[in-house]
Amino acid sequence: MAAVIERVDGCVGSLDSDIVSLRHTPPPSDQQHQNNPLLGLPIVAIETILNFLSYDEISLLRSVCKRMDMICQRVLNQGFLKVERYHSLCQRQVKAQLPRRESERRNHSLARHADILAAVETRLSLLNMTFMKYVDSNLCCFIPGKVIDEIYRVLRYVNSTRAPQRAHEVLQELRDISSMAMEYFDEKIVPILKKKLPGADLSGRLIGSAPVAGPSTSLTTMSLLAKNTPSRSEMTKVQQQVKVNGASMTVLRREMQEIRVKQLEQQKQLQDQEQKLQEQSQVIAEQNARLAELEHKLRELMESSAAGEVGSSLKRTRKSSDLPRQSKRLRSKK
Image (cartoon, rainbow, N blue to C red; front, side):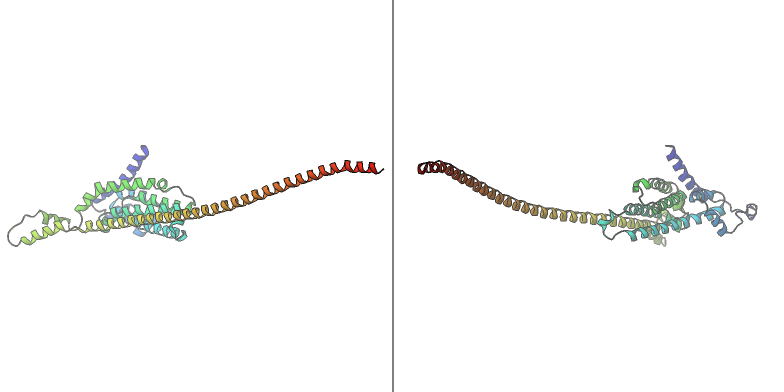
C-alpha cells in the first residue's frame, strides 16, 4: 500500500506542477537571472545539463521559475518523441530477426521480446492520444516524466536480456503509472485546458447568444453549426481512436490467422496419423498372414516328422522279428 501511495504521489506531484504553471505568474526579471548563474546560461547549455537527470526529476524542476518551466517542457516533449523513435528502432530490429511465418514466431526465442514491444506500442498510442493534442496546441507539455523513464527502462531491459520475463510482469509498473497519469490528466487538467483552446470562447458566446430578429440570425445559424459540428480536438480524438481500433483489429486479424494456421497444422497432423494407422494395419495384416503360413509349415513338419518316426519304429520291429528266424535257420543247417 505504501508503494502505491509513493507511486501516486510521484505522478501527481509531477502533474500538479503543470497546474501551477497554468496560472499566470509574473515573468522573472533580468536581475533574478543574474543572481542565479544557471538561469543565465543559454537554453542549449541548460538542456545539456538537464539531460544528465531523469525525466521525473526534470518534471519536478518545472516549479522553479517560468524560464525553467519553459526549458523543462521542451525537454519533456523531446523526451517523449525520442522514446517513440527508440521504440520503433527496437521493434524494427526484433522484427528483422523474427521469421515471416506467424506459426514459427511463437516458438522463436524473440517471441517475448515482440510481445513486450507490442504492448509498449499500445501504451505509447494511448499516451499520445491523451497528451499530444494539447502539446501540439502549446497548452501544456508531456507532464509525466516518470512514464518516459519507465518506458526507457523496459526497452533497455528488452535489448539487454535474451530470455525476458512475461509481458504482464515486465509492464506492470508502466501500466500502473501511465494509467494513473492519464486519469489524473483527464480529470484535473483537461477541464482547465479546454477553456484555453483556440475558439473555445467564441463557440461559448455563439452557443449562449439568444436569437434576435434581424442581422443576428446569422449568429443563430452559426451557433447551430457550432453545436452540430464537432471541434478539431474532438475530430483528432476520434481519428486517434480509429487508429487504436485499427491497430486492435490488426492484432485480432493476426490472432485469427495464427488460429487458422494452427487448425490447418492440426488437420495435417490428423491426416498423417490416419495414414500411419492405415499403414500399420496393413503391416499387421501381412504379419498375421505370414504367421499363418509359418504355423501351417510347422504343422506339416510336425506331421512328417511323426510319420517318419512311426516308419522307423516299424522297421525296427521287423528287424527284431527277423533276427530269431535267421538264427533258427542257421541252427537247422548245422
